[in-house]
Image 1 (cartoon, rainbow, N blue to C red):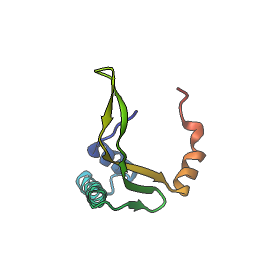
Image 2: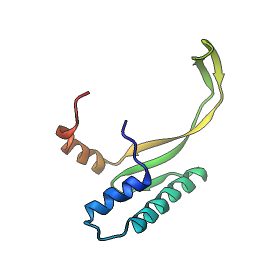
Image 3: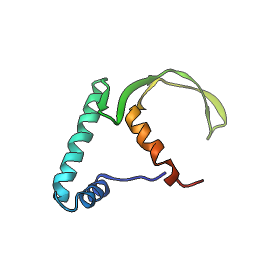
Image 4: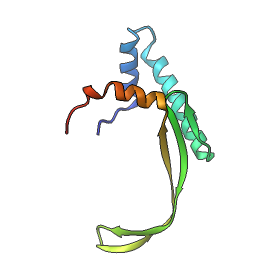
Length: 104
């Protein structure tokens, strides 16, 4: 899995914009978006990005699960997580570029 941090993302965006904006301005914009998503999810509200998708808070129910380190079944307490549902336009864009994906 490729991971990217905000600094790297800001650099990539700046390069795509041919340096029209400062790295700091782009980094600040990413931070505002990031904080908005987090704030909404903490308030148990969904956050949608037009033509990209929706981040929704989700409560995963209590269930039995295998504790790998102990090798036994244990009760897993309910926990909060986030689900992402991609927008149809984003899925279409990914489908158009699927020939560029690498085979495993």
